[in-house]
Image (cartoon, rainbow, N blue to C red; front, side, top):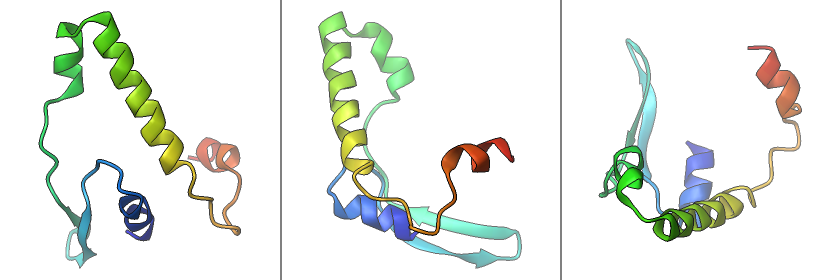
Length: 84
């Protein structure tokens, strides 16, 4: 939840973390709702220039998200990913 709070503090359009905890079935997270439409359903009906504009916006958002540095004690991504 801490990482989600860091991203939310960057004022990125995303669901915001509300609660996180343990329960009998495992763990849970409660997040705010983000109004909008599913991009997978919407994109085919947009013009190429509209699709491009949304792609640029998504890239801008990802750039902001990736401005948060990884924890210093975090192992490299590739070995962690390939170990799964």
